[in-house]
Image (cartoon, rainbow, N blue to C red; front, side):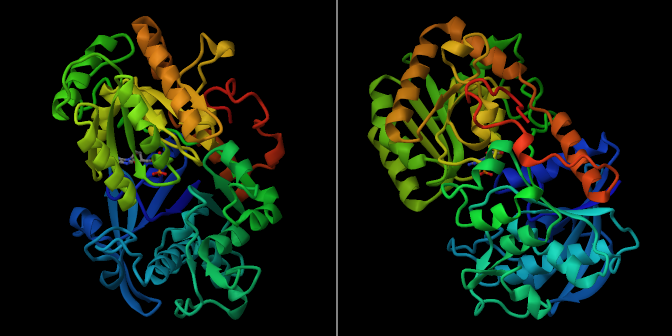
Length: 500
Ligand code: ADP
């Protein structure tokens, strides 16, 4: 089976979050399931710098913009790059300009990406034709719409929602010509409370829609976490699936990670210590005893960083240290900087995106704090587990499935600390529990060992994707309804790893 993956991020070329990790790792995992993936990504400046000399397989005009499709390879995986100088070759971020504002033409940038994806799907651009198209998030969500528009017998499509908070919503005044038929602008497709939503159009049109954990697949049907899209999702309920993300265990391997000062595995946990010592020195902490907490995250309300800010003084009072590596909302960055200034021996903040430092933090801190208010899957807690940092997480989405809470029912299986509801009091209480775990080195090592032994590779999830692809292409009739999958009603403390 051959599939085209259409995505706006791809590790290691361009990454702002988990989407890049997943679209980078899944094709590799699918290879071992006998599935060939080619990936289409935008030709951002940083992408062209890496693969700019690649041959063009087509020159065309998309939505009035001159484009080329380049063919390249990334670690053995085939790539198509949409090279469109006017749309993608610019300074600033992937979606935001240098002032942190959305690019005014994001609608056109990602409609063009989706259109290119659809045209590869229909065979209009390349001689290669996939059996199905896998579109990721709102940026690629018009791909099924264009496919349906351009083909009498459109290819089957899967849309993966990595985070429902991002919906690609534009006022109709903002939109130029999408080169779609008038019906596409109507209530059954793009129209969404008087505006246009790319994600809604994708949900309505794709043959299957999945999200990145079974729990989140259920949560998004509720008013609480449906982000206004719950009505649309409920109507489409029968085609919604949930598959938990895996991690690339070749890249994320503490036994040979070049970003670490000292590599280690679960048998040699003492070799973790030099990483911890290095971090303490790097951030000018003295060597007084006490647990070292960490945060590697976008600094946003979703990630509960305001809650962290609220409880930090108490954590400091108890003798804990915290390293925060992240970027995001300016007022949260400022508050964290303020706390670092107030408690220089206890709080350190590294604002920005730093892949190497993130690895080192996972491999050197004692606990990772992830107080997300909602979390479709979360990868950070999985990296922390694999690197022996015990996660403290809000009980939501993928966090509730991937971390086994330390409580009386899980004395020999716990891998972290969960708290619920997600608020400052409960976070503080969870941190208190972490202090208890830290008190006894043997207990801490047990948590670390269990976390490191948990299997979060892609294999079982890749099998689930394969089943979904077979369902889509008609090679399997095993349509499993959402309600028969692992239930969120089970005790969240016992759902355990990979409850899919
Ligand atoms: P999201 O995609 O919502 O941001 P995930 O947990 O799914 O959250 O994925 C986040 C990814 O981004 C992980 O690979 C994490 O290590 C990485 N990351 C987040 N912030 C930073 C940072 N400041 N520096 C380096 N890596 C980061």
